[in-house]
Length: 126
Image (cartoon, rainbow, N blue to C red; front, side, top):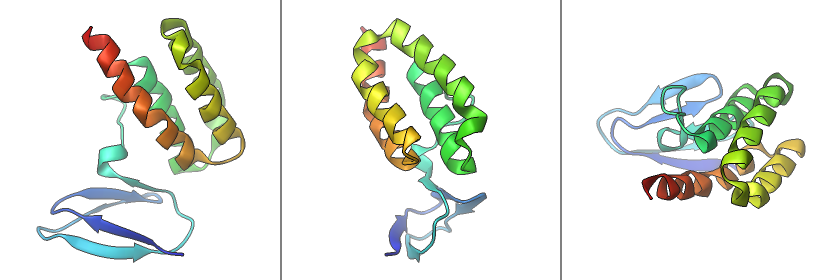
């Protein structure tokens, strides 16, 4: 079943190893296949991954986009250790995320982490 994507003007999307930038009008298209897909709003860069949760997210994002869990496994384990030392209450979500990674559901693992980014921001603002 194809994925229907609607892009705002000048919004970017990553499909596989390609970055697609929309023109100046809203566009809708269908994507059929197994390539990893991330919208601009869901992408972190090394520069924006400046908190423990964001570093974990970036690591999982790289696993997903490059379809290479082993290459990032050691880095991931270091990041979750750092995160859980800082915020032990995130353990349950990290366990679910890790199980999703182990089962190969990397996009779902990213979705699992997104609420933690918001919760972390709230904690940092206190």
